[in-house]
Image 1 (cartoon, helix red, strand yellow):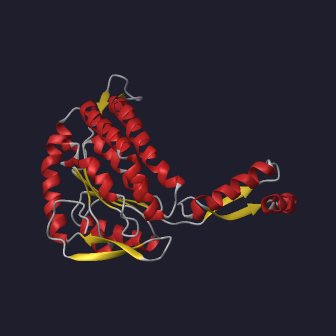
Image 2 (cartoon, one colour):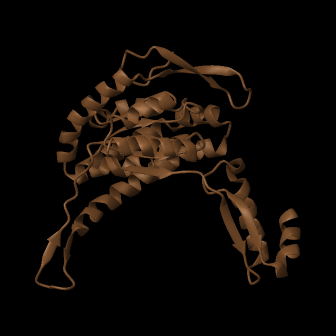
Image 3 (tube, rainbow, N blue to C red):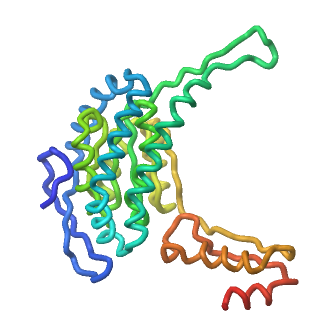
Length: 295
């Protein structure tokens, strides 16, 4: 059995299917509520010291993590291939995360400097925004882009001074172990960033033990997360399912439009949050557009 943390009170296992064969060839352990409570206490204690660091120092630590991810890129990509059944996107994912870390590390210190401003009504009055991080961020991320979407909110939050617990989908958990190994190699980061494994039960416990939550997934589960967050009086950021439309006007370049609609509909076999699902075409060009799309 593979463990993703040092917690030792996990007792229930969850089978994981191979998306290509349909066979159960992997198992994860469901992180218990008690373990999450203990981990949240541990991370909050470490977060105080993390937030006290200059943002440039936090950025330097995260840049070191990006280098560790680069070194482990082959192992992480291999795990993502097994998780998703995809090759090219799995190979690209670590690079996207590395780029995100490096981009935020460059941008964040400059963003903090914009906190001061001057009143447009009373020029002699200046004001300062005080940026104070939430101590502990909880992330519940989906299966379609397991690594990228687990970190898309966590990376800027870490730079802001937050600690974070991330629970990826139980459908695609294999990448957690090789990625967690890179975190363990950066001691200051390991103190404030952890991945946990589990299903909806684990996610519910996570929401009850963090100070802010980011969730990406279905409307049904998102509503549950929002209700739980409201009961706990914490902010919830939800990216949920939709029915994304595209409008093709009579003046559009129909070759480009047909290409954009096709790619926007079938990229990652349509398993992407902004996949096109409805196409509205001006009657004047409808038949011509459809013919190009079919071709």
